[in-house]
Length: 248
Image (cartoon, rainbow, N blue to C red; front, side, top):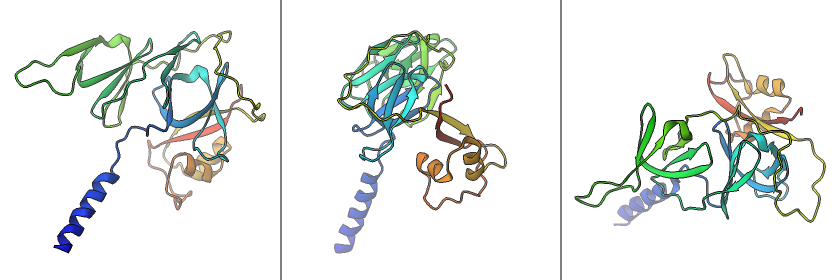
């Protein structure tokens, strides 16, 4: 009997350890205009920069990204804020996301929960609820494909329908800042996020040398095992996220 209970306990422990792919509710999220996203702690939003940390630790470094590269900020406490192509910030949804939902993001700034989406040549159709009542036809929704920026599927994969990274806002765009901090942040070099796709022969050491960062920083930013060999060749096509000094 004790052995049986021990086996059951082990199975339950393994199941509970398998979390959903979506970020924890305590995390903010930045969704970029090319479809990438990162889970962060937003610290400040100013005219043309978003300041954030990758950890809630007090001594975690504060990084920044150009607001022109961002499609949306998802605040854990107050929902979505969209950044339009002309530089305006628009408050969006603050909805609880169903774990089975796929998310459709429109170019104009809107988040739609969609179930069983079907992508056609010029339209996307989807169910409004996970399951229809017995004997009932599920309620359906539809959106033109030309209106869609991104589909984020429930399994964690993303399908960029329209790449918005080329739609840069004017330099004169005015963004209403959040309430200012009592303390002015220290002057630090502005950093930007870049993504490097590994080519034949690339190693962590060679990528670090190319971008002027350290191999250890690449390991930490990409949550690689601490014992990763920096001289080992990377798998072709592997994508690494890096933070480099902005030249602008």
